[in-house]
Image (tube, rainbow over all chains, first blue to last red; front, top):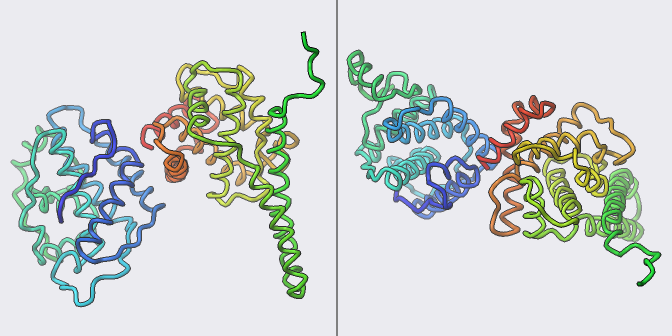
Length: 203
Length: 233
C-alpha cells in the first residue's frame, strides 16, 4: 500500500481535496496504482463516485470544527468520513484478481475495501505531511487478516465504524463509541473519563 | 466615404445558421426515429441508401451546430459572468459557448432531440443589460440563468413557445445550472479538460439536484448554490 503523489493543484491541498476534479483525479490515480501493485482489476462507476464526493462534502462541512487546534484531528476524521461513504456507496467493483491470489492478503480478501483504505490513508497522510508536517505511521492492523475480517463484517452492518477502523489502520487511537461524531480536543478529554478503551469488534 | 454595404457581413449569418442547422440535425434525428421501423422493412439495396441519406443530413446538422469553441471563447464567456469589460462580440461568444455547453449536457442527460437552444436569442439576452445583473459572478450567473429560463431560448421551437412540462423544465434547469457552474469554476488548462469539467459539473449538479432545483427560482439562493458548487468543482 505505497503512498503516491496526489497533489494536482496550486491551492492548499486540504482545499484542493474539496474539489470534485481533484478527488476524481486522485481516485483514478489510486486505482491505477493499486491495480499495478496487486494485479487486481477494478471497474469504477463515475456517477457513484461523484455522489460519494457530494455526500462526503456534506458530512465534512456538517462537523467542521471552528478551532484551529482541531484541524489536525479533523484531517483524520474527514478521511474516515470518506472511507465510510465509499464502503456505504460501493462505487467500485472488482473485475478480476490474479489467479491463485492469497485470500489472507487484505488486497485479495476484500479488494474493494483494500482500494478504499489505500486511497483514504494516502490522502490522509499527504494532507498531514504537506500541511501539518506530521508523518503518518500506519499500524500493524493494516496487514492483519483478522482485523480485515472484522473490518469487513462490521462496516457491512454499520458503515460509520469505518471511521474508527481507518484510525486503527493509520496507527491512531480509534473512537469506537459513536465514531461518526467528531470530538474537539476539549470534548475528547471529557469523553475519555467516561469511556474505557474498547476492543476491536470481533463479530 | 464608402457607401454602406447592402449585405450584412458573413459573420452576422453564423449564429442564425447554426440555429438553423440545429433544426436540421433535430429533424434528421426525429425522422430516423420515426422511420426506423419502416426502414427495417425495406430490402437491403434500398435500405442502405435511405439510411445513408438520413445520416448525411444528421452529420451535416451536427457538424455545424457548435461554433469554433476554444479556450479563448470559454475564457470570454467566463469573463462575462465575472463582469470583466470586453469588446462588443462578447455576448455572441458567450452565447456560442453556452450553446456548446447545452448540446454537450443535453446529450449527456439524454434529453429529447427536440430540446433545442437558440444562440441568436441567447446573444440578444446577453446583450440586454438587465439580463445579467449582480455584484458577484455567482449573482450574475443566477441572473442570466433566470433570463434564459424566461426567454424561450430553449425548447421545441426556440422563441416561439415557452411551455415545458415539469419534467422537461427540471432537466433544462439542471443542464443550465451545470453550464453556469462550469463557467464560474477555475478554468482548465486544455479544451479536453474543459469538456471533462463540464461533464463533472453535470455530475455534481445531479448529485445535489434537490437543493439546486429548490433554489432555481430564488435568485439569492441560486447564486449561493452556484457559488458553492463551482467552489467544489
